[in-house]
Structures are given as C-alpha cells and as structure tokens.
Length: 368
Image (cartoon, rainbow, N blue to C red; front, top):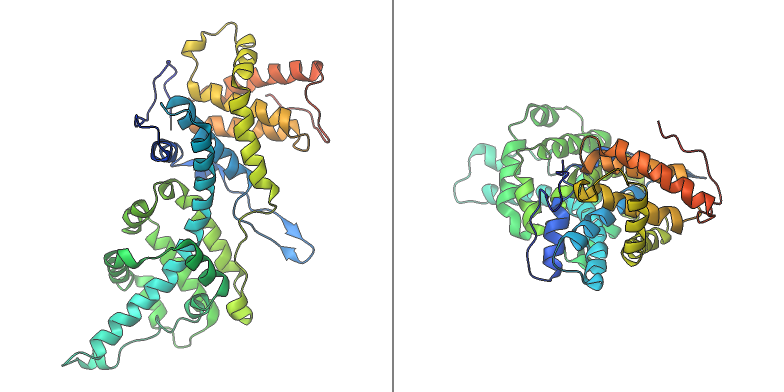
C-alpha cells in the first residue's frame, strides 16, 4: 500500500461528518495487508506454550490506523478517536470468536438441512439414510459446548443469523471439494481427523473469492483488514484443542497482560498531546527536505515512534526502531523505511545526548 509523497495526497477519502463512523471507515481502509508483518506468536510460561490474541505489534498498527484518520480527517475530537481505538481493538477479538462460531453454525446448518430432507413428505433413499460424518464431527461438537465461547458470544451478541445464505453457499462448496469427499470416505472417525478437516475447510473458505468476506464486511468494517491476522489465531486455537478438556477448553485471552491496552492508549495520547513538539523535532532533522513533500504517513510513523521512545523505558530503543521501520515498509512509499531509519537515528542521538531517553534495558541500534 503506497502513499504519494506530496502534501495532502492520499489513497483514502474521509467523510466530512465528525462521527465515529468516519474514523472507522478511514482507519479500517488503512491496513488491508498489515498481516504480512504480524507473524509472531509469543510466549511461553512454565507449563508450556502460551498464546494470546492482541500483542503490541497489532496495537501499534491500530494506533497508526486511528491517528491517521484523526490527523487527516475533519474530525479532531480526541475522545471520539480514543473510543474508536478501543472499539477497533475489541472488534479484532470479536472476529476471533466469530470465526470459531462459524464452525458451530456451519455444522448446525448442515444438520438442519439433513433433518429437513429426511423428514420431508417423500424423501429419497439417500435422504432417509444420509451421510452424517460431518455433522457428527467430534471437534465441532466440543466447540459447540465450549463455555467460554458461549459466554462471549452472548455477551457480545455475535451471531451468523443474518447470513444463512452465506452458510448455504459455503456448505455447497465444501461438499464438492475433493478433500471433503475423502474425509467422508474415511473408514474410521477420530478426533484429530475431525480437527484436521476443519483446518482445511477454514483455509478453503478464507480464499480470496470466498462468500465469507461479504458477510464479514456487513458485520464490521474493520474485519476485512483484520481477517488474515485473526484467522492465524483461530488455527493456533485448533492446534491447542484437546478432546480431554471437553467444554472447559481454554480459548486465547485478549491480552498477555492488561497493561498492553494501557500501552496503546498512552501511545495514542502522547502522539496527539505532543504533536507540535514532535513536528519541530522532525523538522530539525529534515532541514534538507521540503516538509510539504514528505509523505504524511512517514511523519506520522516517526511521531508515534518518538512517543514510544520517550514514554516506555522498558522497551529497548532498537525494538521500537525496528517495529516502526517495518510499519513504514508496509504503509508508506518504497523508500520510506530508509528515510525514516535515517531521521529516527539522528533524533535518537539527540534525545540521548539530552538525557531525554531513559531505558531500563537497551541495545545498540542497527541503522544499516
């Protein structure tokens, strides 16, 4: 996704009304392909591998999204923008549960279709004795009974009830797939086989031309940009499921630590509150550049990076450096990462010389 390097030139348009919707529309458009840089699943605890949904890579991206809309749109209400930031983070977690719910609802739809055919006035022999391997799927049954999933869906009021036509189309497609036909023909049913078929179904239904995307877009504008990242966590969840855990199988928590949400909010507020200060700092180190010709996204990324450098002593300088260089590679011009790398390097040296950066742990910055 490339931004022009001329002032006020952007690939996105903004609605003039000062509403949360305008933030959502413009922010959600920003990162359709950001999943390419979100491939880290951390960390481990004493009992083994441990995964969580929202990490700081995704939080940085959400902050970039919302601040882009805030600064480039007509609405500069910080309260609305903060609510939109929290909303976008929460909706990413909603999508995780919505995709898990799809497994339950697609199974249920298939079961209802089979029952309707069996009970009609003159059913065929095939309808009287249908193949029930799919609707008897052991993994889907376990997921349907999962307490955490049921509680979250009820609390957040998530449902596929308005997308029966999508479920119908998806089921029709699946039954024609070779991998599904082979699954139905397997002589022995097993829990692992039943998990594997759902991995294959989800991968198939998340292809570019799948009907699932129209349903997701109708539900929430953010989900189209979140789908690649969140679906990777769904696959991680399938891997973690054990039949012995039954309905008590744990799903992924939203955060590793509640402080991660505070991280996003502090980054958001610091960038806005110290915007003019950061602009002057960037201007000082781009004397040979016409500021009107520098991509707005480049400037925004540097401001957020500076906010993180100054506000979070526990985050090493090189970690912040590398994260925002990667964001520049994804969101701005082909040369932006090199440009931002050079400018941030100079800014970091000045801030360190003035004792403005205090780090609990730090490492040298690789600026090559």
